[in-house]
Image (cartoon, rainbow, N blue to C red):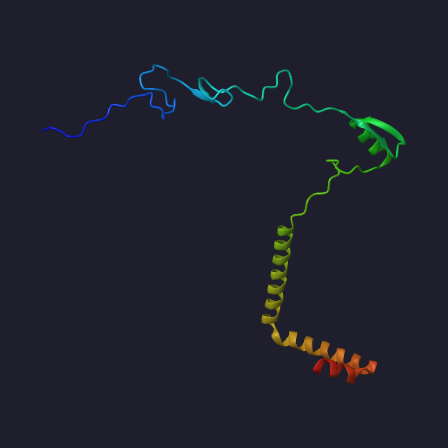
Length: 165
């Protein structure tokens, strides 16, 4: 049985063909990178452009720009000295980590308040369901006290008009 399908042999070096990937059988293996400046493919990893030799990644300095401390009435150039003067004179510097106020999460505060209100309303409903007549008597007694206060003030007619109208 013969097949009419024949594989086409690829020829490298066409005008529109790029130099990547490398031609099969060139013998070059490994990691390659594209050099943007020279516009060519080079063997190996790209060079590290963020080299910092002899400098540790993080250094905390005690020095700071000369700043006038208002309470001590002198110029200070050391953070440690500034903090000791703050403690000595009872000052509070904005941005100090020790005295920073904790951030209040508004969403959690709303959730807590909502839970408290639900609990209070459930308790009130349970009390009413346990003895509704007693609660209704208390409410009627309170309404009578308010109407008596209204009569004693002499504003009964105006207040009843306002309530009805």
